Amino acid sequence: MGLDLEYIDGQTPIDEGEKEGLRIETITTQRELNEFEQQNIEEAMQWVYGRRFEANDIFTESFVRNLHRRMFCHVWAWAGDFRTTQKNIGVDWFRIPVELKKLCDDTRYWIEHKTYPPEEIAVRFKHRLVSIHCFPNGNGRHSRLMADIIIEKLFGQPLFSWGAGDLSKAGDSRSRYITAVKAADLGDYGPLLAFVRE
Image 1 (cartoon, rainbow, N blue to C red):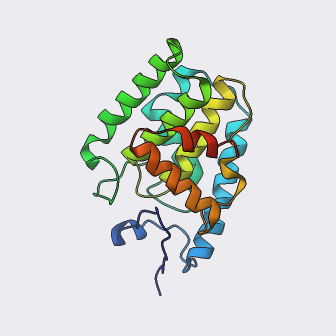
Image 2: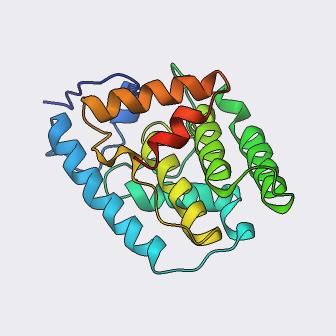
Image 3: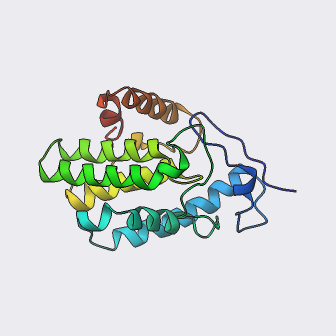
């Protein structure tokens, strides 16, 4: 029967070849996929929140990939693997490792030199990470969890609320989130900084 997916504003379509990486053959709808992915993500969150991390742990290719793998490994065979296809967003796939290293190096610099307040460091990291678009799918959810790890584990501040809505579904929260991300694309982080604490 195959996997029949419906995309909402801001979601990146999964290529047919990437769909072949689905580990659970009984999944056929977006709703079923979302449920299984959410269960997997909750397991990854338990792993994260039971540990301590330093900046040198977090800002590495290894950590970024490992977190994505933990978030999606029960659902997708390619979880934690960088994409090898072009998408409607993101850098050329072959530039992902270089751009990710630049982002990690920049973020360490921001922290060391207090370039931005803690919340802005986490939000800027999240925004650039999703702009690189390392993985075939799950980049938004992955980048938000990375931002939560940064704000809580490195700065000891409360987790972000992310508009207190389900950003994987179409609706007001998702619309406001996409609008805020598009403003950040143009260099205005104000709306995204406000949204993460709504």
